Image (cartoon, rainbow, N blue to C red):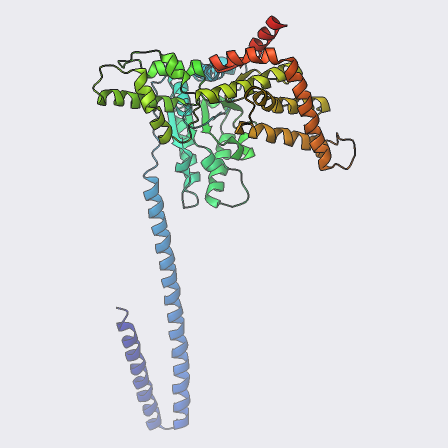
Length: 497
């Protein structure tokens, strides 16, 4: 069709010329009309006709561009619809209960009132009680954050809407926001209900820097939805992340994710409880506590993998039961397959127990507040006051340096586990001198920061010497049970002193 257009245009021009010439000759024959007039009229006719053709061409071009734009928009719409086909919002019925989730006693206690609210919303409405709209589960991968959310839904007997944060992030701007709207609308229709967003950091990263219009539009929609439903609607949003420091501040403010619950790696007793659940229907012969002791740093998911690998190993060897030796044989295989899992040798656990015990006893003596201390994590409470004294900061610096002093004294060697504590001590010393003006001079110097650290080390050494007997007793208990509370330290200290 496109090849015939120039030909038809040429024919039209030829016909026009012939018609004009015939009319011209006719008028010449009648008289009163000269050849010059004929030529002038022909030229004028061509100009008018050319202008007419130009308008036609422009209109055709404009129409073609509109058609192409419409085609592009249609194709984009089709692609968006294709992408949306994979996004399914269907309520799930959870049959998981808290009894089936081991090792999270403290987490369970924090979630009990959420369950009760979902079961008995009228009871809370009568007293005008408003529970949080959002609960943020924070913890390393594999500790069971998704399972906890399912257990809340199972205990409450309400629909459970699961989505990963990654499903909201798409190449087309607007797709993520649309999905967020659809998810919340569906949950409201099925209220009371739980929305669970796993890996919320995929859409909830702090804004700024490298801009991403689609992510920002999705995050804004999530914030709007959380602001838009009332706490009495019976919809609770539970989100999970292992990167809480990356989340946008707007997500964490009051009225959105009001409650933050930390899900930590299981302790010795927790691991024993988890292993008992996974070994319940398996032909196991041996002491579960022994397996729990050799799996320091394993998450619940890692323990599940370990039990499965040990079962396969025993089966392949033609054994009738699963033994401790099967777990020992596959432990390294699980560790290599899951590089993020931390595991420690007996010697490493011993080093950590001395290190953490010194910190715990020093903190108790200097009244640096904490609830418990484990082999792999301390639990010091942040000072949440406007006014903090110099002595309080110095005490905390001493605590961070006390583990190094103890380990060096016991093993006559230094180890790399002190990196984080050294960094924290340096940051506190720097704030003391450069931000709070707690040095000898108004204009701070690096020497003053160094002096603060040197003084803290000397004070910590003196305290270590005076409390060494208490530290050694605490170390034995910490090595045995992997966690020790402030109350237990108090009891040990009272026994000795």
